[in-house]
Image 1 (tube, rainbow, N blue to C red):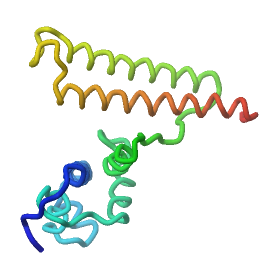
Image 2 (image 1 turned 180 degrees about the horizontal axis):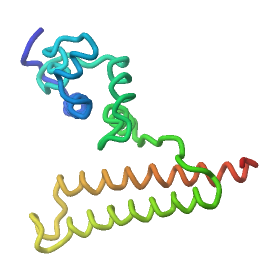
Image 3 (image 1 turned 135 degrees about the vertical axis):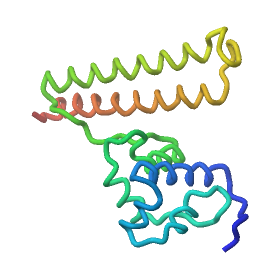
Length: 166
């Protein structure tokens, strides 16, 4: 296998997502030990210049064991963004008043993160002054993805009430 493949930016971003997933699991060695893959194979799946990609079952195994860790679900979220969407997990908490209020509180916190990211980006004393640079845009977009997820959860809970759900 060539160690100098030219991959598209999208493929490289996907490999970065896998690399972050492996790190969240405990690192390449932990993944290799648990899955039976060689450590070099796991490494190759995260390298931006090697044309080796993680299998769906490996990604599923790792994402199943990293639920709740920052960035989860790393590769699934990347795939959703590639398709123009965001990953939205099924709603947590009940569809009762308390569950909905908790979701609204989560939305408020996420909106605060979005507001802070945009305010930081357009601050005249920031790295690019009032211009938003690529890193700042990525931070704001990640915060918006989180807000979208929580908003979709509340939408799902409210729609279940219209459909007669408990």
